[in-house]
Image (cartoon, rainbow, N blue to C red; front, side, top):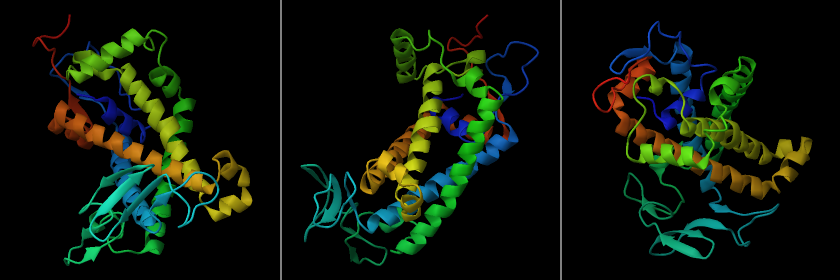
Length: 298
């Protein structure tokens, strides 16, 4: 069974993930060739890339666990987000709201039982011990993999009209009534069945457009905006983002939205049937879900 989150992750890796049309209408219970080999390779490559970038990014954030808007930010400026600690607790502060995070953020115990006062714990960062230089090397190396893959996907998808043919929503699909119907169906875990499971629904299409063409490009652009070299050579990128500190805040926000997306993706995989979902991303074949009444639609 294909889910919006799973399909969006796959789309990050594949230019066109459609197979040859069957010689008869697809029926529930049949095995369908869903993901080509390049798609499957890039899916797992993207999964590794994103997790390494997120964890190395948290290491970089540990060097200065505060976020600001504008061009400047330093220890004595007022951040809009800060992870810190007191003598007895760790905390996350967003604006004027403070949340106790003792044991997880700001104040935690390492593997040797020693008290640490860094923003994110060792199990969430690469490397696990504090090393800003190594964190940057990991982050930038895998950023190239993500950026090159996304660029190749975008160019190829427009060239072969995959975006126009499969991802662009129709006017009827964008109607509030249609979108609300799909939301209700997914909330009730009524996923598409039979041949309908081979087509993208409006939630899948919006997931594609939002993640591939908005979220990740903004994350890449804001990452460039934090680079001193980019600031020197193309200062208009930094100005477009509102300054280097704004770029850093945007980068962090987009990364957290990506974490939310991955969380939803994993949840949907579990709800839709992890064996069928994971098998399809390993072998390419996935079994079409049967009609909810136990019979294929005629």
